[in-house]
Image 1 (cartoon, rainbow, N blue to C red):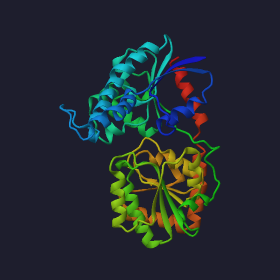
Image 2: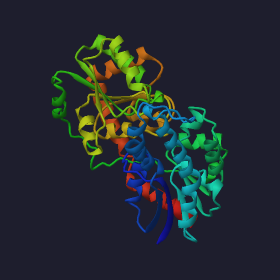
Image 3: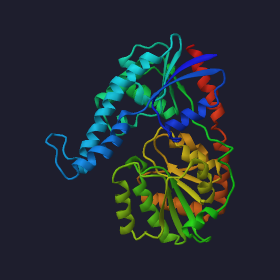
Length: 388
């Protein structure tokens, strides 16, 4: 039995992104005992306390301090910011130092926790680095990210989720390529499989003769959703019977308002539908009702939505940059993510050419079978065994 100090960070109930990757793999690991080390954020408790006690008392009254007015939540936001600092640099390092066990392998489960290796002396360490988006794409050089980059250099191994991210780590962290292991995310083939049906569209009164273009993801600027909407506007000029469905919350302040203004400018109010958050068990129904999945992202470490769409037999169009060509291979079409006209043209071709569509479906199904959570768990176990 291999024992792992599983340094997980903030306790969460999320089942997507990093949390999903962790859960899927470690539910499948055999012969491994996890000593999970996580914390409940102080900010959540203080935020509830501030709203319940301070906000009613000081509503509309400026405080005699640089913290500002509680009426606009500035005070509460400052409390949360301060508590995050306490959690990150004091509470959690103390908890990790207290709870690690002698002789265990230490698995730091995200690049955003790598700073711990600068604050605590740990042996037999692994860091999972999904991507370096804030450091590379957003050019963030805060103390927090400098500590994370420096902490990754101290790891005995780094696990990452694509060859693209591996190359970024070598280039921008300066970490030895020979000590990096690529463990691709998987897809749950018992959940994401071909079961075509359009019943779920009835809640939006979408007629059966409409073609459905689907996007699943956030509205972060790097997701390039405005370009998708512009290309969809061009597509609708060529193919009027088409709707664009957007699944997922914005996850970026002001993004939804910007998209709604763009939609109004293009007169697409009746043709772009925001579905919102969808539970994982319901996602396959959305993939299976779509005629086309489009993911025009500019930068990412991987793309589970592309793999899930392919597994459901939905043709995929994605960007020809970042990791996306590595993910879809020949199972999807890659396009210039800055070319509105080009994307609209390819969307039209896929939606109107039955032979092209069928070819993409078959190649996508074959490609999706390459990604398995069982395989990811086996490869993670091999990394543990390397430094046992």
